[in-house]
Length: 456
Image (cartoon, rainbow, N blue to C red):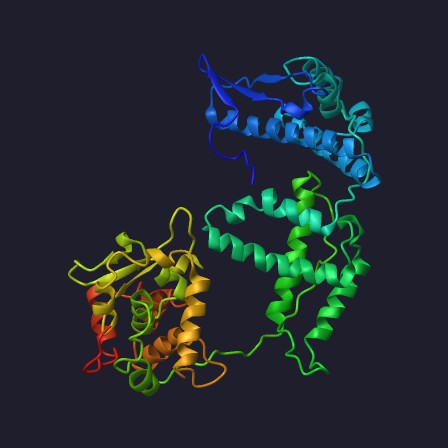
């Protein structure tokens, strides 16, 4: 992915003043005679320089993209080239401190002083005069954008939704993209890979009605979709549509999916393991002797911390506090890894089988770091082979539900339960869940006894 939002790329400090400096790509030197682009940004502020650099960089990228598309000389490429030229004009105008306006508006709606100011800047600097004229005087082509759903999604992933992915790890980013891709694929399968501009209210309504039919009992016996799932798929299409046109500088587009939301709630609760099942089956001595040490440790941590699998797998050495007066783990975000919610950040004391287990992997699980899917698959396979899943509804995540059930049945305070699970506390008067020593003492009340003969 190529972004210009961070760092000093294409920026040079000359006597305290910032300049945009960039070479024209080799393949465009025959048509873009600038060779080395050097534009005075007229500021000593790095922050301001970065914003102006961003606009110029985007404008140049769009210009070169337009030139490449023109060279293909097809009907679609010519249409896309026009759209890229328009995007370049919008970005270049913003970099110069103006709002892009079509030539008709420049001539009829602007006062004479602004028109003169625009004219003065057209022939100043190292930018190509023709492109600056298009940007400042409104000469860019106004052809309709024929970008298709799949093409828009490619741009969405690579540029538009950069902020959504910035703090994600590689695995989190791939998972994020996969979920979005599923929504896009559903739309394309149903309505075709049509241009975004062709998604009218009628098209969106037809798509919404199709989803409604998928929420009803199916003749083929397949499981109906839940309202939450349908809302997510429609919402992903809405986000693609609106954010694409906003990226193009068109903020007045009307959302064809407006008002489409299913209010029904699905009553699905994943099964949890009973205490007896955990103690007699999962904690049975020798049950996981043939399993890799790291996986065994992860199982025992899941049982006594209630943490999400991804939170355990991605613990870093600094998150594991075994030498503390109250041994505990810290669930917190990293620069390149985000938590599910802001409330997920928490400290969990290690009690029961979790404490001796964690001591065997005091630095975490480097082999499995950022490989949650692999760990989940390996644990499911291990549980199935050992017949540790009481029903088809039980999964590894059921250990988290079991932990929550134990806290509830053990009469642990609501605020404490929220704090330990990483849930939002809807009763703020209950505080933050108490000190580490308090949390440990409460968890000891519900901890499973460590069976005699159990070796991790």
